[in-house]
Amino acid sequence: MAAPIIGVIGGSGLYRMEGIGRVREVAVKTPFGKPSDKLIRGRLGDAELIFLPRHGKGHRWLPTEINFRANIFALKKLGVERIISVSAVGSLREEIAPGHLVVPDQFIDRTTQRPSTFFGSGLVAHVSLADPFCKDLSGVMIEAARAENAAVHAGGTYLCMEGPQFSTRAESHLYRSWNADVIGMTNLQEAKLAREAEICFGTLALATDYDCWNGSAGDVEIEQVLAVLKGNVELAQRTIRRAVAQLTVPRSCTCASALKDAIITERALIPKKLRQELRPIIGKYL
Image (cartoon, rainbow, N blue to C red; front, side):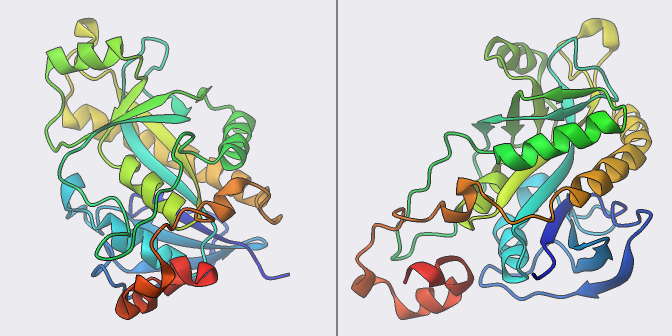
């Protein structure tokens, strides 16, 4: 059986984790342009990992500038079946303290300027996003974090905002009234595109602050965010290492067939060029 290929999206330092061998960089071309940066391949135990620095090395891209379609397409093209997305978030709940981890199970979309589908231009598909995270993958991540003695919250709603500015105080209180639990700027498009690409997707959210709703904790300051995030990188690495060891079995979830019956365009009308470009995603259904 071929080694499972697992994608990890996050900061450019994530791949510098203990136990990774045969590390090399790979440039991938996609129909949607260049990914955020070169992808980094390595071996960890019985699995192959492919790391993608979401904002590019040196953190060069704003959340809105990230080429999410190219990123997910590149991972799909390289054979990735599961993605662990690591990201910093603000907490909208007292019980989710800075330094805690959250593995969310729902999203609220507050973005307005980002392409978030591979389809269009003559090809229509509608996938289900009722449960946007893979339950199986998320379960493995939760257990791995607990085994590392992390303060981890199982489930919760991730509100994805446009950014790059942080929330106003009125917005922060509004999001709390919507029962959102954490707020970030990146993961929603990744989850939508991963579902279209039939890739399992799970988020390891690192709470760095209380957003600005919690007056007693002070307003969000980027220095504070970076300090907490730096302290959580090693914990995220340990959690990923432990989770990967449990992800060597074939998938049994519905993520692997998310596009089945979702393509509604008559096959004869799908442009030939589009068929060719999206072959890694739609090939098995055409």
